[in-house]
Length: 349
Figure: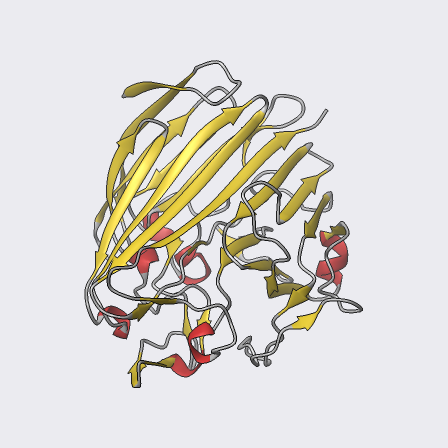
């Protein structure tokens, strides 16, 4: 066990512990580990398998602790719906139409794992890789080298995903820093695919509501591929600029939609989720231009029980390599991809 002191501006030094332990074999047989970072108001467990968040324990307004992340308790169960739960996603988060894109005049055919399309980097994306892990003063730094041609993507991509856990007053703060370099022109879009429930894993979400600071969205075809346009949310079910209850969204068929953020920022939240039952509130801050909000109408089964949850995935837009008008996801040699997303958790009284 390593014990460190982490100091934030205006906050006294707080003890942060980092524990490392075996987690068992992944579906492919690889050995995996967990690293747990904890302070007095949060306990974050991470894994080398997919550089993923495994657990985030937080107190509610009555001081009762619950896990607000939803995924199986062993890596061997990370199959079917749960393959990507909690994981770092790449090389390309979200969808690429027909599993193909053209870069510098050359067309690349990549692994297709969603019918004719590619989702979240292919059938063996970053979520199914074992990453190197190093404990740092306030968290864990994960590292992975994706070989040239892996899942069909060009270039050797050197990637790091670093998780930080901090406290500011009564707020628990999880920050994810992404960085990547390549030796050939390629496309990169990284995110985290955690599945949250602020009431606690296995609890109903009737008291939860969302606000997303986005005045536009990217319309899609029936198979969720963007048509290349960007339209106002005004007058649509995608207008979440005012607090909207999950019950209303679920009654409308759930949601799986990319939003064009009005002002990506690490100073102002781009999304907020509240839960009147537990008193927990989650704010999302990001440098990314888009945010995928996923709230499935039919909750997936976990250990045979329907389990409610939602995702807020900071990202560039889906299928950007095939839409030149979208913000570019091209990374070239000599450049560094950098992105930061921050989750801030507060408990009301």
